[in-house]
Image 1 (spheres, rainbow, N blue to C red):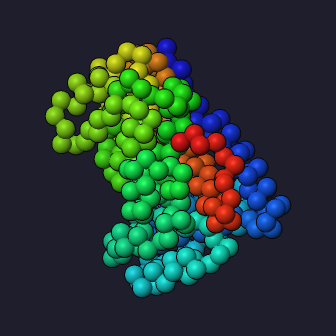
Image 2: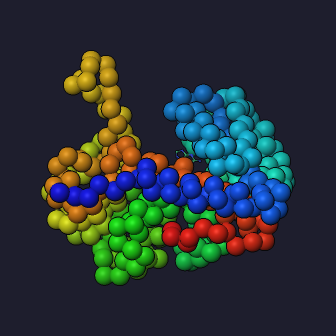
Image 3: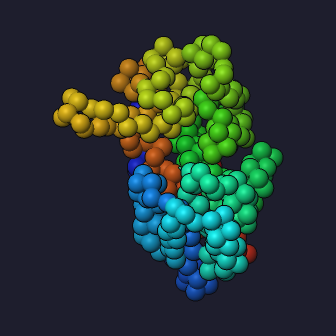
Length: 302
Ligand code: GUN
């Protein structure tokens, strides 16, 4: 039976380290780390995510600022807000919640964030630094950074000789995850919707990371016995067994059948999910220390 990787407990330990680092910075410099989160429109799920990010930032002792903009916000108005936050020395991290309403061009907004304030790790400068193996001066996208902490907790920092397969090739997750795994010396395959023989490729993985957005798509016969399985999916599905009209969350892997085959697996909820917000807090404290010309006192475990 697989070890269940406890993302909540790991996230709590990251948050403890962030809290201490934040308090030390304030004590020495009189300045709190500042995180600005921008949300445009009224998508309920996005509002729930953003509220939990802002709340956690307050709990970490940050200067937490939330900009809630109406759906009719123009590109110019949003760009002007990003510029003012870029210029504000009390703000060290800027996050624009995605997706933006369709009439807005998210790419130009993301690329207008100063790379040193890009706590989402989406700016091309940060993506480039990760691709070049520079984890010292860049910022890494939060979900892959969090998934990598869970991999390291299971395997240690050196993944030499291990095959890793990432299913999914997005800029937000798949590509940076593959770079982190490569940086830790594993042999990495990126699979995606056009990949042939996906189950056979997955069966080769010592570390299998699924970010496909399809409920329970990865089945037991896709998994090598003894593998570590990291499930990045969060899918809401009907749960008539609870009560008519009720729903439940499932990942991208068929957890119940895979937990008897894998050596370690992340649950959904309670696996990668809690790590994303924890790593956003870590990135903000890292950005604040760098802005003060100091080395962040956090373990470089991602
Ligand atoms: N929407 C869903 N996940 C994310 C994320 O990690 N960052 C941003 N900015 N938007 C998201």
